[in-house]
Image (tube, rainbow, N blue to C red; front, side, top):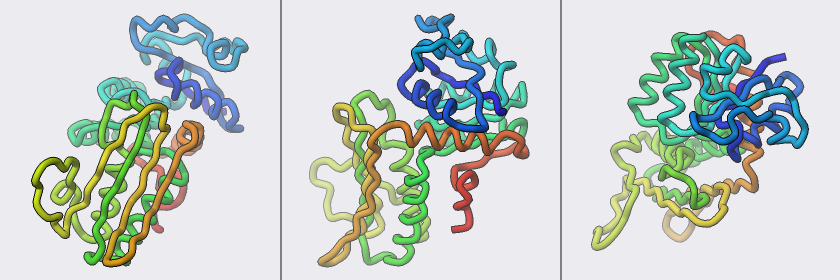
Length: 269
C-alpha cells in the first residue's frame, strides 16, 4: 500500500481527497496536517471526515507528519505549496500538486526542486478536463486563424485566484493550436472604449458567484457559426479522484516534473 499525507486535511477539498484516497485500492490514508494555529490540529482525521476514528491525528505543519507517508497531496495555497515542496525535496517524498495560482517563478523553483522528488503538478486533476485540454488544442489547430477564441470560467465566491488555473491552461492549449503564445495574445479584462477585437486575441473572462464548483467554456466563433466546448463540475470529487489516481501513479517514478497527461497516458494524443 502507498501511504498518503493530505495537506489541509480539514478543509473542504482535503476531506474530499480523504474519501477518494480511502476508496482507492492502492492507497492508505496515513498522514494529515493543517497550518499552524488551526483548531483541528490534534483531532482524529477519520473522525472529522468519516465520522469514525482511523488513528490519523492531524499534525501542525508538514514536518510533523512527513515520516508517515510516501506521497503528499496538496490543494492548498501557492505560498504554502512552495514551502511543502521544499520539505518534500529535503525528504525525497513524492508530491501531487493541484494548487492553482502558482507564478512562473514558483513553477521554475518547483521544477528545480523536483530534481529531488517525483512531482505531478497540474492546474486541474479531472480526467474530463484533461481530455478537454487536448480537444481545445486540436480544435484550434483545425479551425485556425479564422475563428475567434474566447474562454469563460465560473467558480464559487471563495476562490482566491483569477483567472482559474484551468482557464489559463485552456488558453495556453488554444494558443499552441494556432501557434501563438498566451503571454503575448491573452486578454484578461475589457472595460471602456477598447476598440475592435484584434484577430489574434484569446480572451479569458471570469465569473465568481455563490457555490459554483467550476465551469469552463471555450468558444471558437467564426462567421455565422461557433463551436462551444464546455466542462461543468458538479462536485469536487472528480478533482479529488484524479489526485488519488496521480498519487498511486507517481510513487516510484524517477525524480522530476509530471502532469496529468502523463498520469492518464494522454501525452502523445
